[in-house]
Length: 352
Image (cartoon, rainbow, N blue to C red):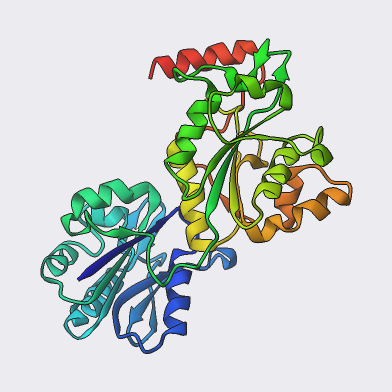
C-alpha cells in the first residue's frame, strides 16, 4: 500500500485539488470522503462520500459534536466511516481530513484507528492541515513513512528558488540590516538557512554592490543596472533576469522572529494551489510582500508592472490571483527598523 499525506495551511485548496483530480480521472476506484467548504460563499461544510459522490450535510447549527465555534453532525461522521469500510474493493482510499476532533478521540474516532490498522488498498491519501501535521503523525503510526505532498493529484508547479533581500545601510540601525545578529549568525545567513529547509531550488542573497564583499555565502545577486534603486522590486526583477522559469520565495532581512514553519506554510500552499502566496499581517492589516512566494506565472507580469510606473510589491500582490494566508497563532511578522527595537528582539529571542 502506498501512503500519501496531502498537507498545507487552511484554505489552500487541498480538498478542491482532490475533487478536481477525481473529476479528471473518473476511472479511479475510490472510497472514503472529502470535506467541502466553500469559504468564499460562507457556506457550512459538507461531506462528499466516495465513490458515489453524494454530498451530505456535515457542519450544522444543530450539530451534536463541537470543536471551537463549529458544530458537526454525528450522523455524518458515521456515514463517513461507512464509506471507508468499502475500502476492500477500492484501489484508492481518501480521508479528508484528520483534524483536531480525531486527535481528541472524537469525530471519526475510534473507528478510524481500527480501519487504518487493517486497511488494504493500493493507495491511501490522508489530508492534514499543516499546523496539525506532527500531532497526526504521532497519533497514527501508519503515516510515519508516508510520502508528503507527492502524487499525480498535485499540479506540476515550477521549482522554487529562495531570495533573501539584504537591503543596504540603515542609518537607524547604524549598520546594514543583513549583518544584524539575532540568532548567533548574521541575519542573512540565518534566513538563508531557513529557506533552504523548505524550498526545492537554489537560494540567493540580494545585496547592493557595495556590500558584496561582506557576504560569506555563494549565490550573491546584485541588482541589475536597469532595476537599481527601486526598492525591493529591484531584487526580485534581478532574480528573474537570472532565472524566469522558477517561482521565487522572497524574504526580507527585517523579520527576526520569522520561523521555518511560516516559510513552510507558504511553500506547501504553493504546492497545492500553484498560486502566488502571502500572509496578511495582523498588526498592519496589509498584505506582506517581503515574506511571500511569487509564482513564475505571475512574475511574468512584474516587469510590465514596473514599466507602468509601479514599484510596490504590495500593490502587485493585490493585482494578481494571490492566495492570502492568515497568520497562525503565536507567529509574528514584525519588522525591525531601529536599534532600540533590535535590542528588544535580541533579548526576546535569547530568553526563549
